[in-house]
Length: 513
Ligand code: GAP
Image (tube, rainbow, N blue to C red; front, side, top):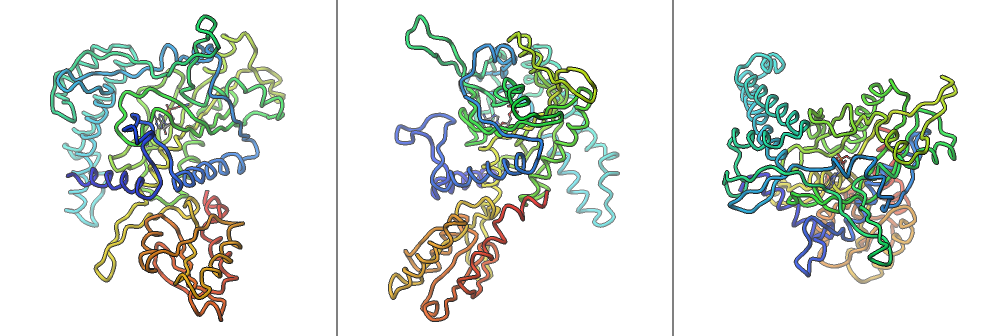
């Protein structure tokens, strides 16, 4: 089995075993691409959202957060273009009856060319050692140039065919490249068709009077339709942002990547309203700022890269993804889009209401331009979780599984462990918990030998274990063990709060921004 597949399987089973993620309705054999978060998962997810909200809303004087409804007037989706253009090109394999996104098949093929180029670069770096000039090599090596050129041509052709709605050419491209069904190897493809991703539902008591609604496929439109409400009630001046975290729904065609691509998921989106003409300046600023947010969590700089879009969504004049190195390769984690004045203009047109800002400095009204940052909570969860899951060989030859979650995001910050279940040690442990629980989410564990409890907390991602032993009864000191270094220190009970705080306090993490 390929190493990455192996790692992905471990991520899935660990998420279930330790109460992070369960398949939805599992006892009924599950529901495709729908997942539930368990007791640890719900905490991790909440902490991710809080980390985003604090960085976005609390740290920016000119960004406010709102919470809008999932149901919206159906005209919203006509105006936004989702009814007509929120489609994915799908293709079926006639032999396997499996359904794929045609663009993803082509993108995966193009990514393989990129990987070939990277392999050449790595080989050369090894061969030339310190004397290796990567930029020079990339610019001159014929094989690297050939792979990169092929990749570029393929993506450009696909982008232009999709833009022209030339689905026949997308199929021809798949055939020309010899792309086979990734699961069966068959090249027997149907034509490419467009498929709308919105879920429909009905509002109303009787069939005759019911109104057709959609479950929102993005949270952004709730922000656009409230743009003036927020601007006026908050007396906001351009540039300003409106942020929101909430559920979104998409009837995804390909749903085989755990919580990477779900049919019900959560987004953290922010729309930044700017003067027309300032859009590219803020687009670049937000690209940089969002990358810094990711890097602040310490998952490793090499695990991120930007991918500028060749194929733009119907609303954008520029767009880039922040891609993350998931167990199945680099894939989109967050999108940064320059949405122009498309959405507000469309809502003006469809609602007949003015959605303009009076700029006192320019002494005129205009429809602001918008820069959007949009990240999936679940995708962020997967990035953090999969990157943190590590199997470590220890000095004594044994192995441990440890979930090295950024401490600020960990579900429990500390586990309090009485060495034995008697002699008054559990009572002291409970006293410590009763004090720490006002500041941190802490847990208690008295079952099994202490070494097994340490391992269990390592696998759970708990940054600290605090052991109460017999000496504690007389010296008021405990042993604190660090998850990542496994270092143990004897400290006074009164010091615990500060020690834990120094690693988990959001201030220390966000000040890296
Ligand atoms: N408002 C813009 C928008 O929705 P998008 O690129 O379609 O843009 C933004 O989605 C982010 O939402 C993605 O980068 C991804 O993190 C997340 N996302 C999109 N579809 C998803 C799905 N089916 N499951 C989980 N996350 C998803």
